Amino acid sequence: MRALVPERLVAAMKPSQILLSLVSGLLTVPLTYGAAIHEDAADVQHIKFDFIIVGGGTAGNVVANRLSENPKFKVLVIEAGPSHEGVLSSEVPWFAANNWFSTYDWNYTTTPQVGLGGRPAILPRGHILGGSSSINFLMYTRSTREDYDRLAKRTGDDGWSWNSLVPYFKKNEKFVRPADNHNTKGQADPKVHGFDGLMSVSVQNFPTSIDNMVVNASRQLGGDFKFVQDYNDGKPLGLGWLQTTVDGPTGRRSSSATSYLASKFLKRPNLHVLVNAQVSRLIQTRSGKTPSFLTVEFRQISRSPKLIRLTAQREVILSAGALGTPHILLNSGIGDAKALRAVGIKSTVHLPDVGANLCDHSAIANPFVALTNDTFEETRKPEVTARLLDQWKANGTGPLVNTVASLISFHRVTGDDVPHPDPAAGPNTPHFEHLFANGLIVPNAFVPPGQHIFSVATALVSPSSRGTLTVNSSDPFAPPLIDPALLKEESDRRMMRAALRHAFKFVAARVFDGYVLGPAGDLANATTDAQLDAYMDAEAGTFFHPTGTAAMSPKGAKHGVLDPDLRVKGIAGLRVVDASIFPDIPSGHTQAAVYVIAERAADVIKSAYRK
Ligand SMILES: Cc1cc2nc3c(=O)[nH]c(=O)nc-3n(C[C@H](O)[C@H](O)[C@H](O)COP(=O)(O)OP(=O)(O)OC[C@H]3O[C@@H](n4cnc5c(N)ncnc54)[C@H](O)[C@@H]3O)c2cc1C
Ligand SMILES: *[C@@H]1O[C@H](CO)[C@@H](O)[C@H](O)[C@H]1NC(C)=O
Ligand SMILES: *[C@@H]1O[C@H](CO)[C@@H](O)[C@H](O)[C@H]1NC(C)=O
Ligand SMILES: *[C@@H]1O[C@H](CO)[C@@H](O)[C@H](O)[C@H]1NC(C)=O
Ligand SMILES: *[C@@H]1O[C@H](CO)[C@@H](O)[C@H](O)[C@H]1NC(C)=O
Ligand SMILES: *[C@@H]1O[C@H](CO)[C@@H](O)[C@H](O)[C@H]1NC(C)=O
Ligand SMILES: *[C@@H]1O[C@H](CO)[C@@H](O)[C@H](O)[C@H]1NC(C)=O
Image 1 (cartoon, protein in one colour):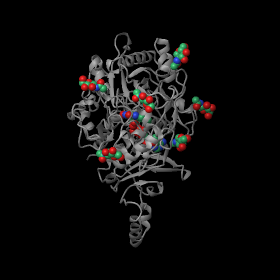
Image 2 (image 1 turned 90 degrees about the vertical axis):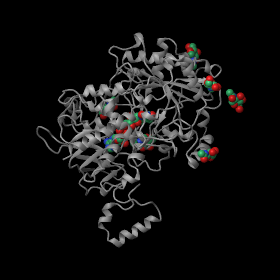
Image 3 (image 1 turned 180 degrees about the vertical axis):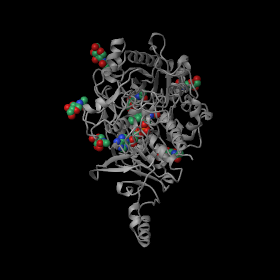
Image 4 (image 1 turned 135 degrees about the horizontal axis):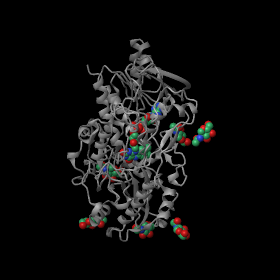
């Protein structure tokens, strides 16, 4: 909720004036006391914050909530985007992609990708409180036990292992009933889930007409399409019902903003959130052997181009995401000294791996023509969407409470298609994934309109390719150069070809006889290796999961950016908590991984100040 009466004004007002403004406020908007979501830096400039968190996204809001549980810690979140409150395209799960190229998106595009035939790809990122958790496709996949055990091994910190993190998954999660209140027995395993956390997770909120066919295909095909009751138990290989961060009882998106910044938390007098404030860089506050960078510089461009500075008493925590965090570090002179000097940025701390190791999943939607009239193509007709929105508004039910898929499957490639070394974390970790969708996942130019579609998307979830995020300008507000190296390595392309052939195997299941008529658009011509490559070049893109640009490594290691306690190497009072921290990309959609590391990070930070 927005601050009705900014603290600054309250401090200057006489008691009678406060009463008057509160009473008049009651007639218009609900009241908030204490801290709140501030639109103007002037509201918070007089406060001495212990912690300043840069980025009110998925991770940042978790850390802000948990640190402010201690009333002695004054916490400020600085977010570039606007508040999430009342943003329909964020609240309605089905509208996720409507946020692309809006105020709520950073509008990033990658550099031309060699793995995409020289094409750049769009790379949406949340520019709104809640960050990408406010605009993502809501899929809740934790990744595998082996992913986290590898993280523990790579960092030398057993606190990052699966067993150590399970309590934090449960601390994050509130597993709730689906919007249509159907019996979910057999669709998820309650033992795997948390019921007392803050962020809602549910299975399948509204049935789609392909669901039973997909489940039956799993039975008919067996093998690596075998049905798994709950892919979030650490061993996901097989096909199962998709779980999403939809709050079933209300039919609304659950994001880090709706959950960790719920109004009861915003009432805490020691928690403040400043929106529409874009951080440019951190300013060095101490030099010498272990420098510190406790001053945060930002601007509120909607108000003035003026740069504003605030200094934290204890720590600055960068949670600006896998693109924002390395960008801010580089703008601050923290990165490869030579590369920074070349673009006119004064080097402060030589840390060559900042922005290196950028890794993302790549994906293709793969449409097939279906003999039906009951697909997303229908839902997307404006008059139908309008009617369904009325239903959603009336009682939070109907097709708009779904994301784009209801079932998901995870697979490994075999034989010669397995790369050496194997980029997957172990034998129970997938190389690729399918999403099954009752229509085009996102309308695109490759499929002529007027057809009804069944999609079997393919995504490479354990890639070998690594890219970079670099800066091309000393202007901290110029966008960075983002090269996620999608499908760059031949071994990744080979796995993607195997994944595409695997999608064709799936639609060959008996249950699709007379339903799936054949591949749609240019998938129709994708058979030989060369044709599959041409198809990838034309159609592959990001799966929206960039990670790894400020990766952890063992304490004292020369490589990497962070120690296992998330402190930036060689700097005092500066940590990173977001998707940047993973040395290897997790094999699931990344939000659950970000939530879980943020929950543990908050405990790691708190323990540093326990007397
Ligand atoms: C379109 C899309 C679909 C996705 N689908 C899924 C999915 O279905 N399931 C899933 O698990 N994951 C999905 N993801 C990925 C997932 O949402 C992200 O991995 C995760 O949310 C990242 O969390 P984060 O905290 O690292 O970054 P973010 O949540 O992106 O938070 C970073 C925050 O920092 C702010 N920020 C950045 N720079 C600055 C600055 N200079 N000054 C101030 N603030 C700044 C941003 O505005 C943002 O609020 C999707 C992502 C997108 C974009
Ligand atoms: C993204 O592009 C849209 C459309 O051009 C624009 O309205 C929006 O302000 C842009 N987002 C940002 C963060 O600049
Ligand atoms: C799926 O299989 C079940 C059980 O065999 C059968 O009753 C049902 O009709 C099948 N549904 C579809 C859509 O094939
Ligand atoms: C789809 O709708 C059209 C027009 O109403 C109808 O002619 C056709 O038979 C329908 N097709 C299916 C598969 O239901
Ligand atoms: C919700 O509203 C729709 C129509 O707007 C109605 O068909 C449906 O039965 C309602 N559901 C519940 C659970 O009230
Ligand atoms: C890098 O910056 C220069 C100078 O501003 C510009 O000419 C060039 O196009 C930029 N390169 C990329 C890849 O954006
Ligand atoms: C497939 O290839 C044939 C022959 O090259 C071409 O005529 C046809 O248009 C192609 N179809 C699609 C959907 O790309």
